Image 1 (cartoon, protein in one colour):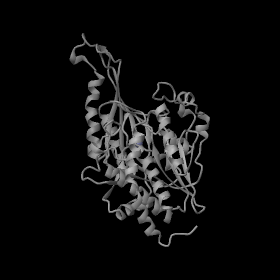
Image 2 (cartoon, helix red, strand yellow; image 1 turned 180 degrees about the vertical axis):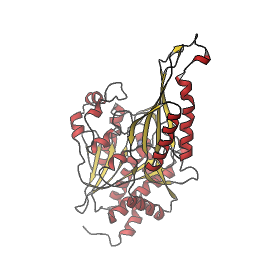
Image 3 (cartoon, rainbow, N blue to C red; image 1 turned 90 degrees about the horizontal axis):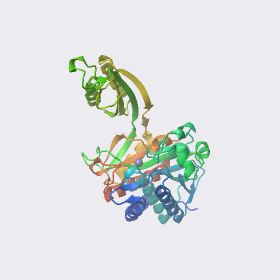
Image 4 (spheres, rainbow, N blue to C red; image 1 turned 30 degrees about the vertical axis):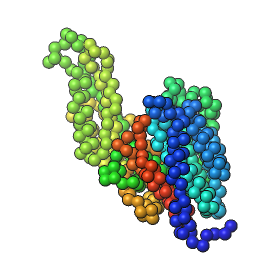
Length: 415
Ligand SMILES: [Zn+2]
């Protein structure tokens, strides 16, 4: 095959040919699948609507002449051969939703990747690398082991993880079986090709890109998460007959710690949350005898998390509470070379950009186990997501898609 004389000129032509209108039409079409009036998207993992959405994406891939198959987890794996024997470049995201979700979370990344392939096809551009377009299943935390589809794709899903609950009320394994999936095959799943890099375009879901307004975020990494259970012991007793000065109320003892978590987070420039409180025995006429607070802190820097953790330990010890460590997830930094390629793409397209961490988990953090990864963020209006009024301006969706394409072309030349 004849190589273009001037690959850079070719890249300019491809970027100009990126069909933003078709991308927005695709977002509308996919956003209609599983939408319920007044309730947003109801495209929970492996529901009828979720399966229909991935079938729709698979049909779009096939219409563009891609190979497109479902793997053991129901991930749609689109494939375009490259002109050289190289590891594959991969683009993708997910199309399942939370109950009452919006049309942009996940879908934008999948459809923008599709738009990249559409551009390559229309311009007759053949990449040196094979290209995988990944539409992951079950990214949202509506099943156990989420993001489940990418965990299975990367060959790191354990059988035990499927015992955990799914949104339909039963176990995740039962949901999979009911929908015709073989959970052993999910555990045995693996990527079809060696990978050189993974890129994911996603809405920010926060509000950092809104002030100052910046169309493109270059993700530095996905934050680490540390959870703790902080338990306060008191004395359960009769709420009517026990005088106030004689009480040992575990919830009253716990109350100052709630604001301490907020203060520690603010002081360390991180986020900290108490999302659940367990009060025992938990009756209106009984003084709380035992209270457990579920505490979570998140940040990109382990050193900062270490310092905040120590401050929480000190505060818990000072109030006589027990602090036990729960789930912990290490920060997942993005690849600096891929981040630099995204920044070059922004410069080429004359788009303002800035680096920021992702406070939410994404499929990319599973892909990081296989290959270098990077993510491109576009603004979420009002910082709203996981809600029916989640929205991103068309111009910013399209800008994100163009950056994805320009980064892909850059990596294809250089990786
Ligand atoms: Zn998402």
